[in-house]
Image 1 (cartoon, rainbow, N blue to C red):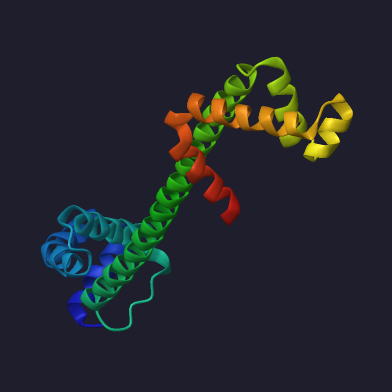
Image 2 (image 1 turned 135 degrees about the vertical axis):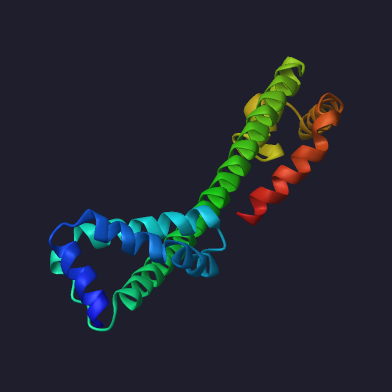
Length: 193
C-alpha cells in the first residue's frame, strides 16, 4: 500500500471521520460510474457505492488491504454489484414464477366457474323434463342402466324407453343450446385429463 493510502487508512482506523470523508469524496463519483456500468441504474449504483463505504467504515478494524485503498474500494463495489445482479435475477425468476402460478390458478378458477355454471344449467334442464322422461334419463345417464334394464325395472317396453330418451335429449339440447359450445369444450378438456 502506498504511503498516502497507508496514512489515510491509519487515520480511518483511529476513527478519523475527516479522513473517511476525504476518501469518500475523492472516490464516490468514479465508483458510482463504475457501478452504473454493471447495474445500468443510477440510483442502484449510488446505493451500492454508499453501502460499500458504510461497510468499509463499519468493518475498518478487520479489513486487510494488500494493494491500495482504491483497488479495495473498486473490488468491494464490483462484488456488491454482482451480488445485486444475482438478487435481481432471483427476484425476476420468482416474479415470473408467481405470474405463471397466478395464470394457472386463474385458469383453474375460470375453468371451475364454467364447470359449476354448466352443471347448474344441466341440472335445471333435467328438472324441467316431464316426470317419466326425467326418470328414464337419470336411470340411463346416472345409474348407467341399459335401455332393457330400464324397461324391465319400470315394466315398460324398450321402445318407450327409447322414445323417452330421444325426447329427453331433444328437450335438453333445446334448453342448453346457448351452452353447447362450452359443453363441447369442457368435455374435450375432460378427455385430455
